[in-house]
Image (tube, rainbow, N blue to C red):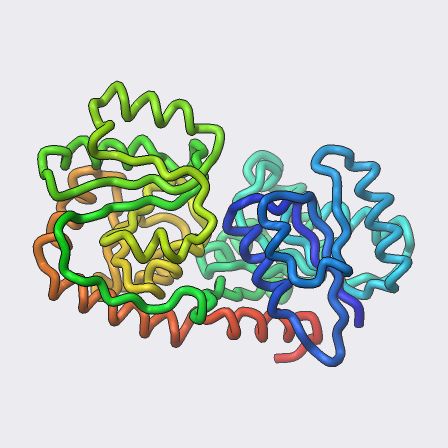
Length: 350
């Protein structure tokens, strides 16, 4: 069987890293894999560039023609869409060429159609999508509440490449680094991160680091200046080696307004950097207790500060959380487990 794996564009993001890691690892004697996406900074991570087809970021008609040519040329049996837009392309393609293509849709985030046109969204998935992969039980439950047929949905958690995100025992040192690694966009809520930094700026040992790029760069920079945080908060820009950024931090923070199941949480747990995160989406399925990290239920900067300070002052606590979190990820969230489960969906195996 021939499989076409598609995503919008290869920019830095959770869904895009998922796409690249899946492309790198997919290998099965019964399957041949092809890929298509808009180009971006992650293109270099694509391993089989001979099977890659670039897509436009804006010309939908051109993309449909490109995908149609790809599907016919390689006799594609399965299209694996990693965004709603790609799923819509696949549905249109199936109707155009009148071929029984299986459509697999991995749902990485909350879509505008899902929020504003819920009955239409449910009808679309029930009628046209063969299989829906959710990356958390939380998201699976949301789809069931929408009326999606239970038989269409399966949860396959994001997986971490444990050979890349190796466990790193922190050495005792001067200074304490608190980091956030996320696209600089409104939903990531960097304002809360800066509020935490402002409350802790009188502790000379704590420094804050922002990794990532995005449309909020100027606004965040201005807030750092206006709030008098230039000596306490440092913007790193694009992070090409996330594992090293995460290992450098003593604590990794998530402040997002919404998340489905962020890979960065698992990456932090894998390398041994304690997580302090908002309790949103499926994050609680990774951090199931305070033995593995801390969840803040109410976006309280004070609660974040309390957890950060307790971790700073208690090395034994940090080491215990780090060790248990690594073991938990190894057991439940490996990349190999994610890939093998995905291939079973392609092959209709259980």
